[in-house]
Image 1 (cartoon, rainbow, N blue to C red):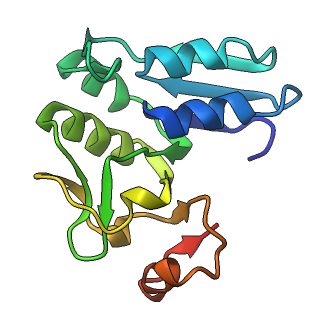
Image 2: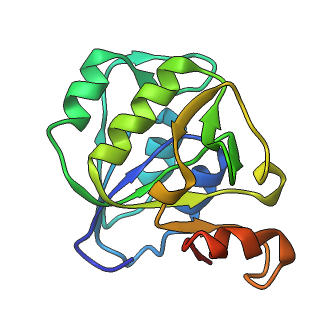
Length: 162
């Protein structure tokens, strides 16, 4: 990331950690539908936070619905950090909630680059609703060393692994 970029962060604990770890001197504009992520970003003095409004899911603590999707349709960000519940080589990125899937699809459409921050326990797992094919992800970020055998097949699909 570099100064002046516009980011889009989905909800979830991984993106919460990403928001927490952003350097305080980095100057960014961040869009998010996540209440917890927005609160974390508010502590960064050089980050402009733009909250994507809509109906709030009490379980996921993110906004959803047509108002949120319409707002996403009117922006184009540099990078989307697309958290996901499950990622699989054959099934792609999947979720357990249909409305969350619709939000994440709109987020991908609003982004020039899609990065999937995923903890290793979510690798090679599946849920019932598909967000996208694995090839639609530009980069996979995980806590594993990039040489870990669990990541070899992702690299073989031309996905950058960090």
